[in-house]
Image 1 (cartoon, helix red, strand yellow):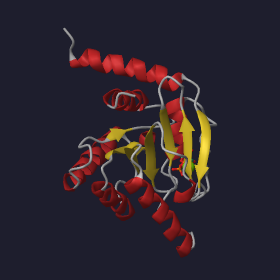
Image 2 (spheres, rainbow, N blue to C red; image 1 turned 90 degrees about the horizontal axis):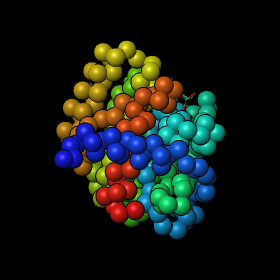
Image 3 (cartoon, rainbow, N blue to C red; image 1 turned 180 degrees about the vertical axis):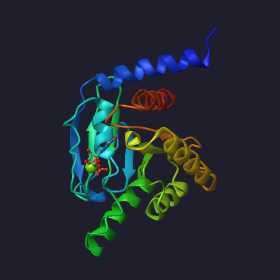
Length: 219
Ligand SMILES: Nc1nc2c(ncn2[C@@H]2O[C@H](COP(=O)(O)OP(=O)(O)O)[C@@H](O)[C@H]2O)c(=O)[nH]1
Ligand SMILES: [Mg+2]
């Protein structure tokens, strides 16, 4: 008999193996015109500047220098593509951060346009993870992205980052509060994942979820 517990264990192990392979940088796009041709399924990571997108990609793949992490917010303003092993065609996309207050208005407008166009018009995009800082919770700028995702056909889920920075009780209430806010977004996964790139909390579960997605899409 196969139980859901067996399924979870199987996906965790398969996810571990998938992400233990070698991942590599393949492409950087500063504009919609320069995107790589669609091919493999894509999983994108969106969120405010400094929320931990690049760190999460590094933690997922166990490759600390894969995605560039920065102490200077607003640096990655391109869509950055990474590819995995041949047997599992999958791309990870590190998205430009939004909500960076110190940037020029015209620049912010063009980054915002790039983010929203990508989320709405990319049929190879299979899932978007929207990262939210566990210390701060959902902000107004995040709501704009959720609204765009509600209009797109993409499945999306929220991830709380930097869970190591707050106490367990505070994390539990942040999760509950964020899940409550998702009631207004029926297109989103109702559950929120809590992660830490520093302690690797939530990484096995996230790898398993991406592996499940690949299986569902027959990739
Ligand atoms: N404590 C802690 N710090 C983190 C974590 N993830 C990222 N950071 C830090 O947050 C800052 C921004 O991370 P980065 O991945 O560059 O964010 P991005 O702008 O969204 O790509 C860096 O100083 C990281 O070291 C985490 O899980 N825990
Ligand atoms: Mg980054």
